[in-house]
Length: 523
Image 1 (tube, rainbow, N blue to C red):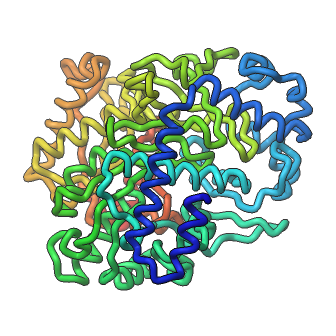
Image 2 (cartoon, rainbow, N blue to C red):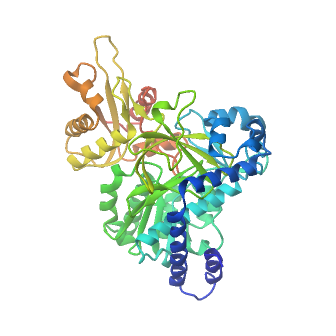
């Protein structure tokens, strides 16, 4: 009998919750063994060929000769890389929302809305029934490897709290629904798992993010929360509300049962020190997840403190060197073919009808066996307006280093170039930073930031020498909750929405600066 079936039986009886933990640990050992023993090349090729067989009758399958594909090499020869815009223009938009048969044979029940950090408009990512199953399997696999590393964990002894978007999804013409991926996941929580989760759908439905946050804090205040999951910037707002309501100094005092915080969506390093102080207990562990609207890409293996892709949950991975991404025929590496230290663009083929789809993320592998990687940024997130060639990972490292040097706590930040107005002038970077604990001096923070960037990136250091081609960064202080106010004005408050951190054009930086100034939220 499957572990899920066993849990469904015991959740409605007098069997104590620790029985659920025992069942899960038994499942976790089996699942972890499957992941460890899976031969990467064979497992991934098998995943790909299964997807191709299922989709060979689609329009995409016919146009790309799926019936002739017998290997990964055949697939790469017949199916080129594509972006969201390519799929939308050529396959989805002409029939939207009735996209069944275009790139996937079955009806699509959900479309995950993505804010489109690599394009200006909202993206509608198809979520098939197979993808819902894939995401559930990935989440269970993540917790399985966590349970393997921490066999005393008792996550099912209390409640698992998912801080996500509103489940009030938008109905489309064909009866499908569109909305936040986290909200879709909340709606699709299996009945056997609901006794162990929070919030109930009645609370998850609230569309006003600030009202919802208050309701969630009040309703969870006395619950035995064991696991908390969400985007770090929104989790911090929840922490503040909980501590205020409870009159406590730390999250561990509010929820003494808390064991694990699963975070994702943005780089955690700028938040790690702040989270540790906010939580107030070394026994609460942090675990990074890497779910995208396109599929659950990877999760942190706590034995290595690095992200690990899952070879057998309905995704086929390809990794393209970032330097080759714009070439007509870039090199495409499988999980077993990657090289350590190379910046790769993530490309996925999925059980929702994405075929060699460029996700827009960049990663670098730290190890090949098992494959372990770190998220390094977005393909469109970089700073090189002056030839400095900074990637988002380097900027985030520098912000973290400057905060530590100045004993400051950063809530969030945005950076972009400020171009010279006269030919004889020199440009610079403008950092808009919201602090929970501000530095004694913004000038001191800016100097520490400049030093860290110079240490991390040789091109930046060369451009900074003598102030001849790049001035020291300008740091401006965003008032508390200023970014949340701006996000609310954009209709992107809460859930999986994230502040755009980097802007190489300078246009978004100028617009954001002007808006915050006019609202009195910028010093």
